[in-house]
Amino acid sequence: MVFALLKYGFSRRYPERDEIPRTPDLQSHYDVVIIGGGGHGASLAYHLAKHHGITNVAILEKGYLGGGNTARNTTVIRSNYTDQRSIRFYAKALRLYESLANELDYNMMYSRRGQLTLSHSDGVSRSLRLRADAGVFCGEANEIVDRQQIRSLVPSLNLDIKGMPILCGLWHPSAAIARHDAVVWGYAIRACERGVELHQRTEVLGMELSGNRVTRLRTNRGDVSAGTVVQCVAGYSSVVAKMAGLKLPIRSYPLQAMVTHPVKPFLDPMVSSTALHCYVSQSARGELVIGGGSDPYELYNTRSTLELKESLAASALEMFPFIGELKILRQWAGITDMTPDYSPIMGQGPLSNYWLDAGWGTWGFKATPASGFFLAKAISENRIPDEIRPFQLSRFHSFDLVNEMGATAASH
Amino acid sequence: MKLMTCPLNGPRNITEFQCHGEVHRQPEPSGASDHEWAEYVWMSNNTAGVVREWWCHTPTNFWFLAERNTVTDEILATFPVPADGPSGEAS
Ligand SMILES: Cc1cc2nc3c(=O)[nH]c(=O)nc-3n(C[C@H](O)[C@H](O)[C@H](O)COP(=O)(O)OP(=O)(O)OC[C@H]3O[C@@H](n4cnc5c(N)ncnc54)[C@H](O)[C@@H]3O)c2cc1C
Image 1 (cartoon, rainbow over the protein chains, first blue to last red):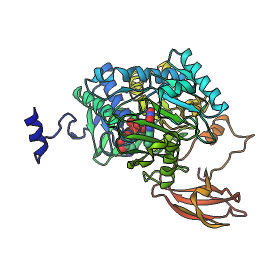
Image 2 (image 1 turned 90 degrees about the vertical axis):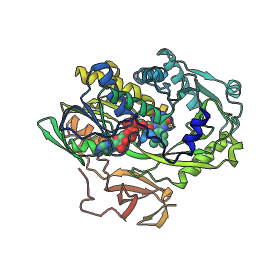
Image 3 (image 1 turned 45 degrees about the vertical axis):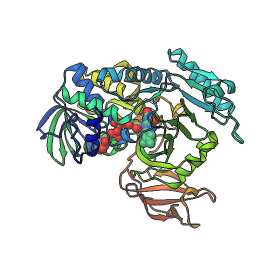
Image 4 (image 1 turned 180 degrees about the horizontal axis):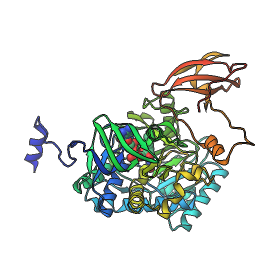
């Protein structure tokens, strides 16, 4: 064991990982083509193959598997939303996550931490109370905690932030984090074992329509036809939808985050403050993960800005004043597909064989198992399950929005 | 720090400005169908490329138009709202 490890470590040629298959030749037709090889695309492919026997499926990914927002998110998994329709959906996702390592036989370092959301004003305290009660009503664990309880949950937290002392908090004990890459790898590996084809570096460039169907997709590796097409492209939702002639209620903004160098574990729960526009958690490696600042204008560019790094650092320092000596180790951005009500868009658009999985904005990692679960069911039965019915594109025409702005404003 | 040139105040830090979205035409409220109105209220081109947008320099509350590339993050031009004539609405 020790010898093998040393040999591996000193060897110049590391053995190639063969769990994720090499990109095969592109065939001319698939029953289902999934555009976008992030967590959502991989989860959908897995669920189609595992539960519905649909295996003639191709995932087309323009870059590499999971290199989009899946690789860039801060992995907060929680169900403490406001609207019952969302709570029930995200609760399903949380349950699926809890057993995912078993289901996929793949370690995704799922770690239940609990999430503490802070209030510094009466208005926010009322909205946290609403979220606590709505959650409890739906059977999810949520409670309001006072300063004393906050002190025992997070002893290192500064309760007396100047000008905005912490009044109370929303405690959500089942919230968790997971290794983001492992989630998409696990789904992709198990999907490919069942016959799904993963095509990396395969970009969809255009579409041909006939009547209200998409008949062909044009890619940089040739054309392909499909019975059903699903787009799971996060920040590029509007760009890809436009190829199918669709206009979406989505605006793309970069979301920025960063991590510090690793330190000894001191922070078990995730701590979040909407007023400070900041949340902090400590990864298994000991790095402090600090997120998430949305850029103030629409952009398809993943550059980082000093302004947002400064404001994130300033807010994190208010909560944990002793971290001032830590250095920023990495910083990055992802393009988030923001909807007006901070809820996703799932279901069939106006075209008969074209499905949408979009509008995941700053909150879609936690949904990865559930979006795939329900969309696979919807596609195989050609019928929208009740759990995702409220999230269809048509809600914008009936003005029946699912407002989650309050539960999502701290961007996770 | 990123600079934007305000047609009234000259080059200023971009944090002094607010973006108010792409210039687009409001349908006649009394004549528009519910569908048209919903499209106007919610849908967005969300263009990856050059867009024409409303911006405001908040300290002086001066509103103007800007052309910007949303892929390269370059501000191409800023100009006051033309006194007459179209302001370049995208559909
Ligand atoms: C900084 C940051 C922090 C976040 N924090 C959280 C959090 O704490 N909790 C949470 O739940 N969510 C969070 N999110 C949101 C979450 O990351 C996303 O909603 C989620 O990962 C979306 O997954 P996806 O598979 O839909 O998209 P992605 O992982 O982005 O995958 C989409 C893929 O589509 C590909 N693609 C695009 N166009 C084409 C094309 N034309 N042809 C082929 N392929 C194409 C892209 O290359 C990409 O790989 C955060 C996001 C960011 C940026």
